[in-house]
Length: 163
Image 1 (tube, helix red, strand yellow):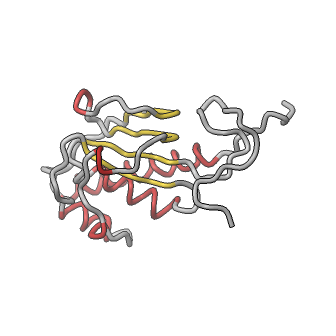
Image 2 (tube, rainbow, N blue to C red; image 1 turned 90 degrees about the horizontal axis):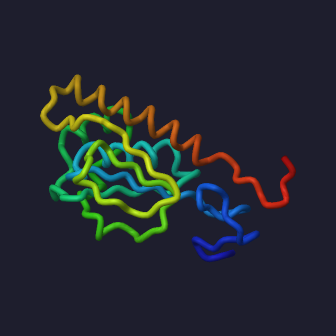
């Protein structure tokens, strides 16, 4: 058995910066300001619906130190336990490289981090919304994470693949 993270195959890169013929799962980092609501829910969805296809992490540029109780509640409605998560800063997550970094509408508050692909999802911060609004934000994040899982799970063509 190979150690976690060992790559097999050619050493050339595709347009995403991933090894062609890679055998490891793509790594995704979700970032918002406080790492309390949006990025926590995105990490939760990625783990709930794509843990076999990618490795997900989340962090905040100015972490609040807590996971929002309403985020915990609305994710529990879907069967995911956010109580196992912690609000983290960018210096507390595994270092890069990441295949994708997703910022959650934090604009200039989110620093530029190196990644093969970057996404900025303009998603409103639900922390002061009523529960119905919070659920709407949760559901939007869920839809976007599902699309991201599909996109990042596509096979990477090898250098010898004919087109």
